[in-house]
Amino acid sequence: MAVATGSVMFVTLYLAIAQGVVVVKSCRENLRATQILEEKGETIRLISWNQITNGFVPQTFTNYYDPTASSGKQGVVYQGLMSIASAPVSETYASTMRQFVITVNWTSAGVQHQKAFSTFVSQYGLQNYVYPVTKPSA
Image 1 (cartoon, rainbow, N blue to C red):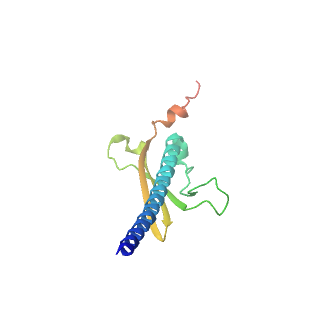
Image 2 (image 1 turned 120 degrees about the vertical axis):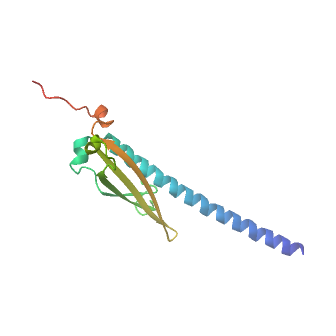
Image 3 (image 1 turned 45 degrees about the vertical axis):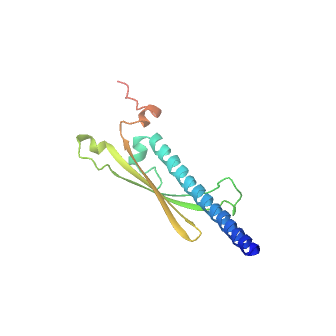
């Protein structure tokens, strides 16, 4: 009876540890996807309006779980897509706004995952403080 109880407890403990490892791995991959989205979002906020409207922003990108690791050991591959559209507003300044949607997809343990982020950029927004618009001299 003691051996049977001990065996059940050992198997239960083993399964709990194995499940914990899977959950931690999943959380780490999800956090890395969030970091990638934040990085791309901050990049968008810092580019000039001319770069936004003239196609400077790449539509697709690839990143890795550990981009500093040697080739072949970088872990999960994150495929990204950035789309630019007119902002869904009807105010008079709608022509000076764009909506960015950044999507990251990755596959882990045969399961497809997706995470997305959306932000707005205005012609007269934050990027003008980083890249000031200069007026032509008279």
